[in-house]
Length: 278
Image 1 (cartoon, helix red, strand yellow):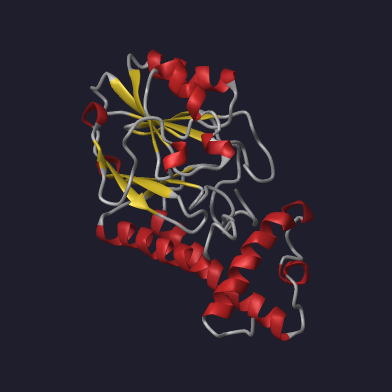
Image 2: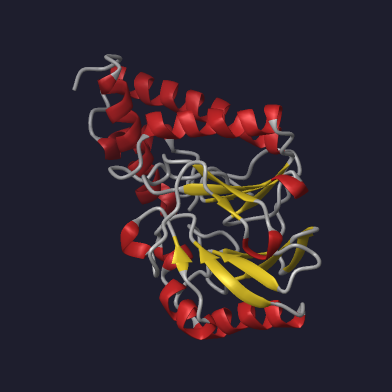
């Protein structure tokens, strides 16, 4: 779910289905839009010699796409062993229930309302289906229930909407909070520095091979936007829509409603930190 232009130096072409790392394959959902970029990336993750695969974010409720994901798993000689969700937005999670019916799998998520089965997901959890080591990383900010999945063997992280392959993500106020999101970006930066993560497998857009560069850009972008919002308020732009018109004038107007969610989160953050008057 994007609210800005492409990251400098990152690919702008369409995402295609296929292998991304030794253990991951992307099946692109047919739901392109200004908010979803090329469409939702549904990720199949499996150990090379395993008969089981984990599917992350089945995507929208689209039987053709869901069956395409299953076909991709079966063509690799595997079956789906588990379904995971990065967060509950419909373009990632709406098809999860139907996918669970088709595959007979459980659905694990942070939000209990999205789970099918008894087990949720939380900090410190490690997914071991089919011999995988897939570490759960809480990454709130885009939404309160956002998670990422660290795949140490491929030095990769699957980020859902937290970091996109193109553009920057929405802080979806009021559920998303900017303070949480900034903490999340710092946590992801630590993964790139301390754990050697170099690849971002995003929920939308192309794979990023410079994870640290992408996270650093996101942090710089957020600081820049926050300063712009503070300046706009000081100049007399008081309502979120007025601030959007001043700060996001260079962004396509079709994205302004999403930008307004981020602006509301920024205004809340500035107020809480005493940088502007509420």
